[in-house]
Image 1 (cartoon, rainbow, N blue to C red):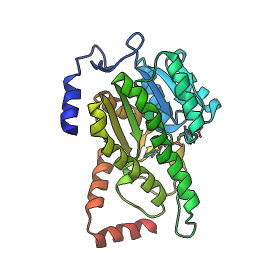
Image 2: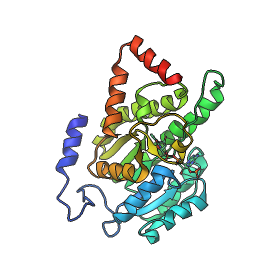
Image 3: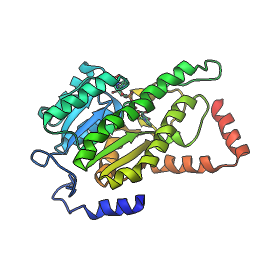
Length: 280
Ligand SMILES: NC(=O)c1ccc[n+]([C@@H]2O[C@H](COP(=O)([O-])OP(=O)(O)OC[C@H]3O[C@@H](n4cnc5c(N)ncnc54)[C@H](OP(=O)(O)O)[C@@H]3O)[C@@H](O)[C@H]2O)c1
């Protein structure tokens, strides 16, 4: 079914005059401009996505908690006049409901939504805490569920829309010190997989983005080796291209994606050896 829906989506693609693909049935708004809402747009991958979409002529709605950093993102865009800043904490229902009301009143509700805000915090057995896990789940998982809940009635009534959820290749496997992060990102993948078919039948695409290591303030804190790390701009350009083609699963870089696929298929004894080596 997902495959059929995907084919249906591809069949709707016309050859575009530029890279900004025009999709029939996807309500491109005012002047055929794509309206894109990005959460976590003040830094890293989110800020790079804003730059990429701005370069392609999209109208942008940018969200994060820190409005000064959002202003810096806006200043870095090729078309800052087409970007609006909506500071909010994505974990707070009132903030998010308020945002939806504002978007409703704009007359140009976003047709592409990138739920990217997230965090990583290492946690060992020594500092194991259900409270820390709850905090990570709140931001990385529950905030996405909340956004989807608030978006669905709006997108359903339009019969169109594209939501992209930023997970991670870390969703594939539990590694030492990354349990809470990995669990939160895996929960996102499973949630999206289970919703995709029903949503396709409603005309709504739900993509899961699983990056490997990307150079951002989040990874700058890491002290361990990060193989095949790519720059945030490269990551954003890759995500943009795949989202325009309506890919439902976006995994990159390919080398890390395959390594993760292989590691997740290893027999238990070998998988344990890999984790022992990583824990050193
Ligand atoms: N970098 C990587 O290697 C990598 C790999 C795989 C997946 N990812 C995922 O990609 C996403 C972006 O990561 P990044 O590396 O770009 O991280 P980043 O540079 O730390 O950016 C995180 C963004 O999320 C925002 N944010 C954090 N808490 C928020 C909240 N409660 N409400 C609203 N916004 C909030 C931050 O802004 P404020 O602090 O101003 O709110 C910031 O804009 C995350 O979901 C991450 O898990 C990253």
